[in-house]
Image (spheres, rainbow, N blue to C red):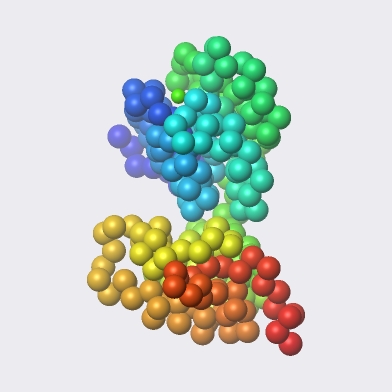
Length: 237
Ligand code: CA
């Protein structure tokens, strides 16, 4: 299996049929794509929001949230609306596909499909939406996800990798309150070091670096932290 080529792009495949998921993942990885997988709509939506992939392959009939609902939410999301979506549909789901296209899906492919056809469709969808300028901007704060760098009102600030990941997790879902545990898990994964686990210390450091924009990160009493989606730095003055 060749190493993933970051410039090709990161594809999230949301598909509950394990054999189809495995074939797709194998072929995409073989062709150099970075691949994430989800087997239900809820998990898929969360991964799309936190990982901001370059493209989503989205099955229609899924547990928890169906593909149309996931599509609708991705296309309504501040940070996710530009991610191209290719719906994967069974032949009997044509009517649903039209619903998906109505929600902003970019293309659809009917099962069974060949891997060559899927790859061709992916290339077209990614070309239409060139692999980004991989950045996330909320209010005055802009995160460059390739370089792990951050600016506040166009001024570069220094963050450790852990701080960057925590800030990215919060900013990727503005308004969502995260418990400390959820933050660690989303930002750093289960393998994180014990020293990484003191979220309050990291948040304190992030706020210090954000300066006047520190109120962007709110404390949610009894829960943890969230990004205040309505924060406006000029309110401070
Ligand atoms: Ca399915």
